[in-house]
Length: 178
Image (cartoon, rainbow, N blue to C red):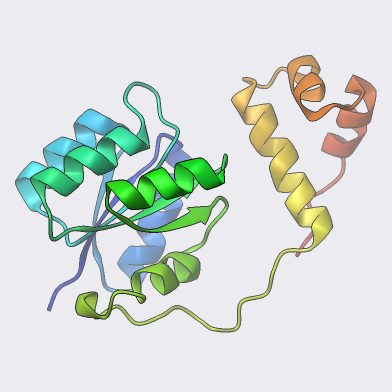
């Protein structure tokens, strides 16, 4: 049985990277950058699975989960977000999401989430998961906040609660390998 998946994320680079990784694993991949594109794909292609980012311009991922669950009840949804909270996780699951993952998540993390529903027939990803180091997690968080601030170092430093010069020094370093 051919496995189809829809990837909904407003970050082009992340979405395309995930799409390539799923395609290499034999999935038919559809992508969307927002609610409207996603609903068009769901209506036309009826994918079996979807990975949805919660924070998108326009309608949110929570609104998409509700509409997608109504339009295609058989579709299984895993939610990704860089802004995790217990309340949004509970709401996403209540609306029909199968599982909730914090960003950055890779294909193996997502496959493991889908593998929880045996009816999908998804093989789990590599079990040799190695958590990122604290330095790597910090670097990824800093870059996510900087991206959300439109590259404005002063605004990012304020959100992170550190001095602008400290943030500049951290950004000059290469990302930790693991």
